[in-house]
Image 1 (tube, rainbow, N blue to C red):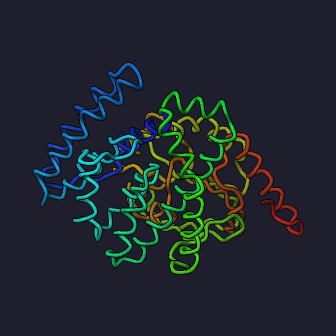
Image 2 (cartoon, rainbow, N blue to C red; image 1 turned 180 degrees about the vertical axis):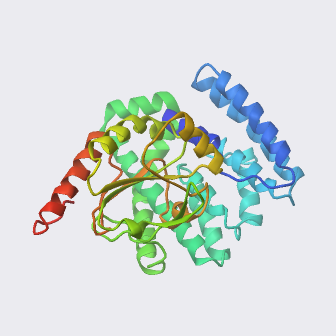
Image 3 (cartoon, rainbow, N blue to C red; image 1 turned 135 degrees about the horizontal axis):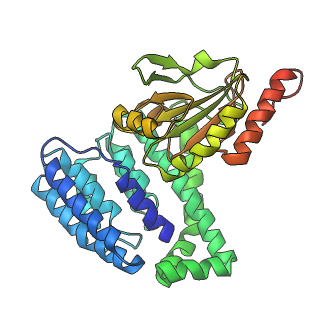
Length: 361
């Protein structure tokens, strides 16, 4: 549960929701106040109290600026600050959810909130998803909603099984989240597993072909991006080389922690048919270039921005997201880091020297 709460704050710190032009100043100011208090909180209990304090304030902003673009952003904050417990009737979270269902089911941005709600165990994500599926005409938006549900429901089903079988894990979660929530998670396990299977079938049938197949062994889809000079670049230009695609952002702690190891790998493989391509999800290119001035990263850099591009086409859910491609552009490894990344690249380079050998998986 502590990880869940930390994850919420990571989403907020990342600026995951774009602010509208009008009313954005008020949301930005309140966000700053929230973070000041949240960072000053001494423990989990204090942080929870800060989140509960600010949820109604963001709801008030959304209601006051109902016709403003920033209303959605304020509602997003309410949802993310509502914790993991069941949304009580007339609570800020429940009111925000009702507004989202009524006014934003046709909004493209709603998919991001379904993903956030999907981490809850109270069925709110599935409830919102059904409204979106019934009212949003965009097939890709519908598919994203279904995919978010599948990912979350599968994870919740696995967590429920572990809570039942692992006593130490259950005690740890009960200590942080309470016995009532843990019981609810366990009780919902079988239902979540069944629902995940249902939505998986829906993805494979009704929404077949909406998303690229990024499975190991499949050819990577084309990626078109911009280099630091603003020139258009394509992933297909690197055929003939083993490629590591590192989708990251300068604000991502785990991404930054990888830099020293990536430097070693690039230096070690100098002169080999290998390329490391880091694709930045920073909102502004200047953020990336200034970071690189202070922290040299001597390899290929592209700037995607915080929305669209590979983030949308490849359904990037977290940072860093890593793909290792062979010299034919086929995905051979996913989300390997450190020594595992080194070994993956070295095996693929050996495969190039021995083309008769079955490529590494």
